[in-house]
Every structure is written in structure tokens, then in C-alpha cells.
Length: 110
Length: 114
Image (cartoon, rainbow over all chains, first blue to last red; front, side, top):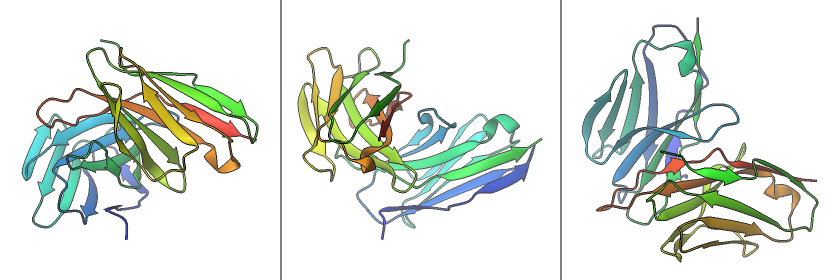
């Protein structure tokens, strides 16, 4: 079993819809949680970073962490065609490395 | 502020050759990590350097090595290339402050082994 499991997708949603992305993890030592967006042939771009349970909001993006359930989510409100990309969850304990989910490819249809 | 810079962007090498990839971190960042990204395995951790010291290493064979220089720039080397080494190699830099591990990635070097 992988340390980090991410809903595989792909997801296709109409413009303006809410996109919901989810990851679960098995390593209780994970303390830091990140979401990255990766466009084709580009490097991952950091979207959200959090280290506590609860919600963190940044514009149209909300990251949710539930450490008791070992579950994290990313919500994208009012989705736009420019949000079409692969979304990666990543996690870390204090060992200087990130463990990634496999990624979810999202297409927002105009 | 300039981002993480990786060179070259693309490389084609022959099996058995060796290759060196370069990474310049964001100014002021002292931690540099390397990851391999493939369609089958996703993003996998290779190694992390801080102040020229390797602090962690992933499960890759000894053909994969790296180093960091005093200006925080880093290089990774792959010797005796195999077809399976074809991948996007990504470098990330971090400003380590009180356990903060936000990592910012470069555009990657796409290596093709033929």
C-alpha cells in the first residue's frame, strides 16, 4: 500500500463548478500538507501549504486537513478553463522529503 | 525574485552514458531536493541537500548521485544510463525555517535515454 493515495480521476467539470480533490495517507508522522498544480510539460506549482487540521482558504482555493482521519482535500470554487491541470497532493514529516500522490487530472470545460 | 532554474531543459542520451543535471535554487534557499517523475511511478524522492550535506536519500540505485555547492547550487549525476531512467527530473528548493518545508519546483529536465 502506498503512503499517499489520491483519487485517480480524471475529472471533467463545467466552468463555474466546484472541483473536489482528495488524498488519504497512512503515515501518522506526516505534519505538513501541500497541494501542487502541474500543467503539461511544466514543473509543479505550489498552491496551498498547511500544517494543522482544519481549513485554509486562499482566493478560490480551500485546503482541508483532517489528521484524525488521515485525509486531506482541495476545493476549487468557480472553476475556470485555466484550472485544467494535474493536481498533486504532497506530504512531509521532518525528514526533508515530500511524498506525493499520483495526481488527479482535471479538465474544466468552457 | 527568480524561481528555481534547471538546466538543461531537455537531454537525449544513449544507454550506458552518464549525465549531469544542474539546479540553481531560489536566492536565499539553502535546501535543494531532487525528484524523478514518470507516468508509471509519479514523483519519487531522490535526495535532499542542505549546506552541502545530504540529509536524506530515496530508494534509488547508487548510479544516482548528487552534490551541493557552497552557493547552494546543486547537481545530480546518473551514471550508466538505462532506458528506465527516462523521466522528468525535478529540483525543488526550500527556505528551512522552523520546520517549514514549502518546496518550490523548477521546470525540470526531461531526460530521454535511447
